Length: 152
Image (cartoon, rainbow, N blue to C red; front, side, top):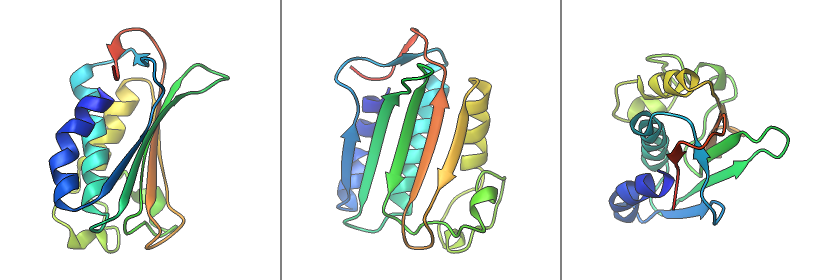
């Protein structure tokens, strides 16, 4: 699923001359879940990373198994506009008016829906940004099972 989403977003990344870095294990990672909905989660995070990262910026997708729990952690990190620390807690609220993000076209529902989809799969999602202009990392964690193949 990760590679499918990355392939789908490639034209937009090329158009903005951005650099996409994949840090995923060579072997398959699998989780229990709805392939379509989990692809929707990935695509929303990738689209946001592309939208809020300037031309020539970097986007990194990382997938790894948490050693202690066996859960799967996937993150999308960008070098984009970042989020003020005061706004980070509200980023998953519907229609959250995050400073600077209001200049970008969108419904204001993407991250709210993304959070609901991750939680519907028994997972968690978080956002981190060191501050305005310093990029953002979105990380979601899902229980690892053998149903949906994420790449391969």
